[in-house]
Image 1 (cartoon, rainbow, N blue to C red):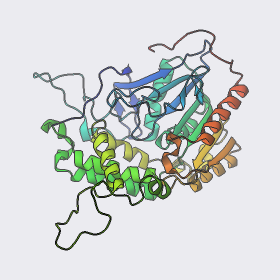
Image 2: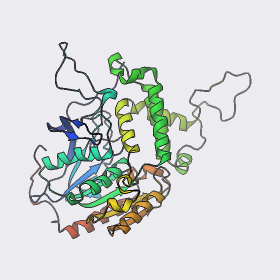
Image 3: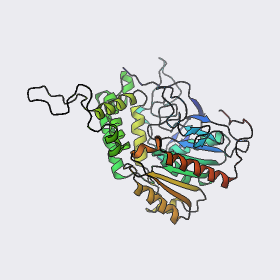
Image 4: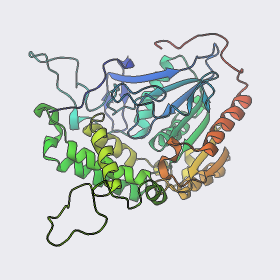
Length: 404
């Protein structure tokens, strides 16, 4: 049974002209699903674009329509919070290739329906995307709002990659940028992790060559394993030890079974096993497998030096954007060394850049968790940038953007 469904109430905007992708194809029309928080100032100069990570979406600061859980950055975005919606107008859109309302593999190839009322979905025929393609889709939405320049672009992990692409592709449309727990290229190790996840999905018999919906199925086992694998990389050894250690589930022994007992090779003996399986099973109910394949491959293509003979600094030449690069000491997916590589490139380009490494044992996911030093960093950077930009203390009147 196909248990994956999408909410039908997304705020979205359709762009008939679409986007010319880096692969050379035009994807049209394009639909971008989004959510907004706060009020746009009359000068339209207080907008912050938040870019979500691989498995995130536009529901950044409100209950998710499928899971009912709080928004993925609810602790950071809202009145009086580090990204203060009493002062800023916050936008978050589902990326191209996503599965929460924006055009992606779950979208129909055309608006024409077959005689039986069904439409052909893209599936694995969806064009290959890059992070830059995602950013071009976001730029269509920003123009629709009538915003000439974003006050700030903020994002972690894949969201941080989007921040960097904004700085490179649309440098005149961004005042401040905060790339968090990210890098200017995807490392060989990270590509390897993504490939194992993709192969797990493809090996699931229910994948059906990427046409699983035609069989009223989803590759739940493969997608669940992909999520479990990825989730390990989001944590740290310290975090796993603190949360689970070698604790066993109730009724399970902590020593090897007797020779006369049947083997329990696939039972949930340890608490960490149960945790990972829960992560996998809950994920398949809200995410599309083909979107996972599309988006992870887009991350793999990320390399800001590719067009500059390996020189990252050339990508930022002449930039006037204020940067704050943030990383976490225990993040081994996007380690501090990669943030330092980015900072050195920005320094070489004479950019205005600050660098903060947060001491944390929570791993890559630290930017999503309770880290007071990180909260202070975000709040402080935005306050300083707002003063430099000459923003008023708060919007003068309720004046939402078109379509909000």
